[in-house]
Image (cartoon, rainbow, N blue to C red; front, side, top):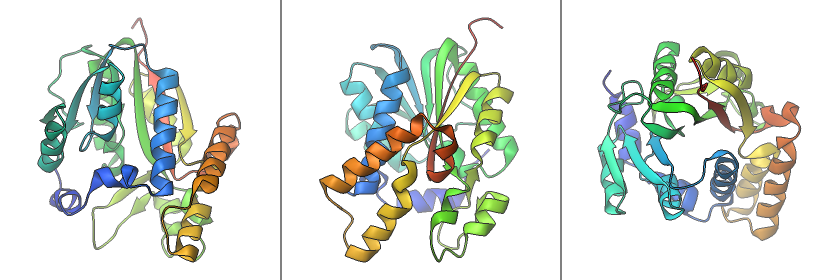
Length: 259
């Protein structure tokens, strides 16, 4: 199950950490929302967290600073080097075939792998591995892209294809998979996980933020835009029908305490 070369090249040429930490309003919304949703579901520290596809360690850093015992597993060697440079425990690994022992972690995060597993068999393996290594009663949280959100982007040439197939095929990067929200819950259940719930990370404001970036030529849209976007996303948490408006999704589920 080798990593596709275009994924290695795509992440090797970019700065994944900056996507969430550069001050770009869209990135800040995603980071803040991921943190607050995880905090609402995580067990108390110092629980053990396996951060699968954890990249250069953006989420592992704040979790470690909050007292959690975090191990980053990522298929991109450059990401592992960057995570280790921060003093984080990190190893090269694949979400579809983890080296960790059965029931060895209180929490398993998959905040990136599902984007890059366009085949259903690969996603199923990743979910099953998460179920295998999390302890009974433990939390599994997985991020995904929403196939319907791109329909809100005016002038998009790929929105209908993505909504229909779930696939974005691009010449300058890896093929990306977009979930239907109900599909994300179904994959969690098929892996044996209980109580799946899907949240919208960016909420309804994502495409408005993108449009404002293009209009103003700036990616830091200011405190008012940030707070408005966060308020809309938090409001949508109690209105499940609004999840289809958010580009990034977060599914949380648990391994049953008894078989």
